[in-house]
Image (cartoon, rainbow over all chains, first blue to last red; front, side):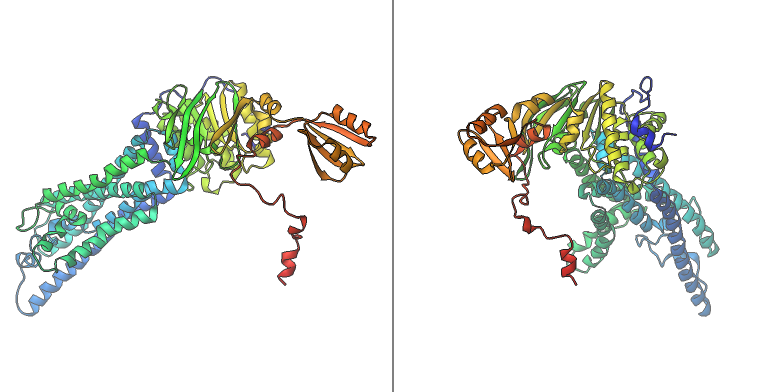
Length: 302
Length: 320
């Protein structure tokens, strides 16, 4: 092992031909580099594990709350000498209310949006904060491949974690609701659909997060805007519907969180956009942030 | 080889680099010398494609840095030692950089060994001392085993051992026939390492020549004279293109006249001269001559009265 004192007099040991390789930059290489970057931070590894646990945990909690609510309805009915059938219970959450049973896998989705979205902001804003971005741009001076690699990795990780968590949430929810007499399993209409689209939605949020981190170059700013978009705006939108006039009743469904949320449901409901419309609108939002971020990243001094 | 043509960078209303053209020749150590804020770092950042020139072009081995298929194999750069994620280990930092170019992990271990980072490679880079950070930056620059190295202020903030290490490294690299472009505001460092000098001041190139030319070509002959009749001799010598400075009693610094002429004047007027020393120009002198009008931030302390400096103990005493 070379010690400090030895290197002082002889900085570099003699060596034969270069061992540095000659293949140059490849996209797979850049992808691997970003993968190493993500997993070589202890904080990321812990965060991703906790996210998985948190999505399932919050999902299970939501399942429990709904279960006790339904159970109470059943008990109240019993005291009045009536029997609640699952069909009657189901009428307490009509289609379009967001409480359909097939949506149970995504009960903890909001946590995924918050944490994975923030992680995506941090994935690039922390590089600006520490100066790492200059090393990144040194190795990949064309810049765009590094951004695309980050985007792919974030999208895939967000998708996988959300999908696994959604399946796990449903595994918990299924027996609970079956116990209440509901006909609910993997083949119930919309269950598989909501499991697979939930991941797409969160992946989209992560891409918006990455774009915000790139545009603002600031962790706190990026996360604040993201939370504003997906949490504050949806609360504001629910107040918007109280404004007199039909126009304001139709506006909220076009905001990112509502359009994205609509994408996770199935079936047509009068007066609101169809799920695939919601999906397309949300995709539009993703591109609205992603494309300017890519352009700015390419042009701006680092 | 690095070639800059009319390279200009404007930040808002401030021109950091102003139409700079120069060539860094292959196989030699070129020093890039200038006061703080002269535009050295900005120029280097433009070479590496981090900053976009406002106008002009700069190429490395014939192509803009970003246009190379394997940039890390062309140029390795240490621009600032803190271009590292503070929570990542040095080893993983280098591994991530190496991955982009498919550089084998064996090479990562090699540069870690070369820069003497073995003991701390698995530790978080955020906890590194300035010297360790500098070594990590150099390890990253060497990763692709490039023919050209750009080092911005590599000895800045290093302890004497670190300075010596960087100096030996630059010598080793130049012995290997590598092109080294090295910036510094420390002239002593340049005098020891560079073959060729590019001096920059306020964004403009003010000298581009070999070390010897820079030292020899700028300063007029200056002679130190010690005499018992300083005021009298000063009056006899001054004027007609000759300037005389007196900084100490019985000591004059004469410019514009050689020592033989001074001795003759002294002899003719029967003035006792007990020392007559021609001052050899150093890089330092040459540098100050070149940059005296170009320094961005002049210090106003040098001309102040000695009494302006309070004794070290005074503030503490006043606080009681």
